[in-house]
Image 1 (spheres, rainbow, N blue to C red):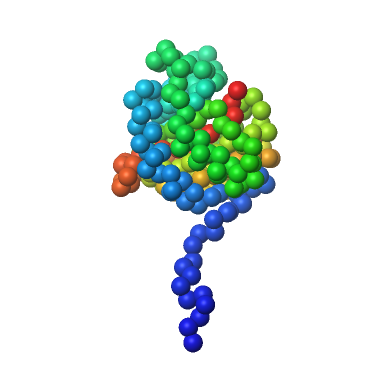
Image 2: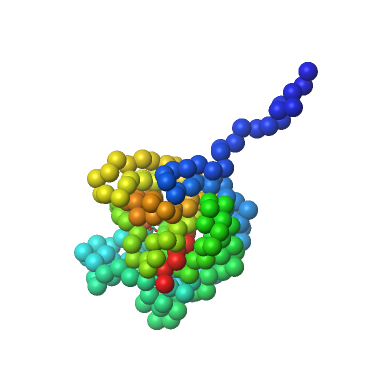
Length: 216
Ligand code: MD3
Ligand code: FE
């Protein structure tokens, strides 16, 4: 006798709890991917990717740009949010509606229905690029979660705790995955080890990460 469950295909669980307050939504960006990648091209025409300098004088291997009312920047004077793109001498590109919709929908599904981002930091990793272990604490109100969207090549994501030396767990982040970091996990240390080489059919030889923030 044929079974009711015969044509149910096993999928990744849509909600994976990574830590208290941290939720991984596998593939949640896929319905938005075409619009988001097209909107990203418009942003990068106005505010190109650039390798910023840390306060300690190191050039970051990850290239960055931003959109929204404010953008995250670093230079020799420190880390901050700035309403203007310092390279272009004008405000950052407007946050596209499809970016807002993706961020709000993911935040809502993760239990943060009120989240309205005012800043989106856009990271571009080419093979070999990495982001060392850090906390995100330049935002004004840590009650807001951070929503991150992974596009292109897969990466290992390292996720620790409130102290730099807390044990680290690793997660694979793939094209279309969205993660929401709120509650206690909002200030956890995290990083991305060197990106492995590869080719993604829509994005090419790179990984793009969007992080939506309530900065102001
Ligand atoms: C956990 N970006 O932009 S996304 C960053 O893949 C950043 O480009 C990484 O860390 C990337 O600051 C990681 C996942 C992420 C982003 C922000 C977090 C995890 C987070 C803030 C708090 C806790
Ligand atoms: Fe971060």
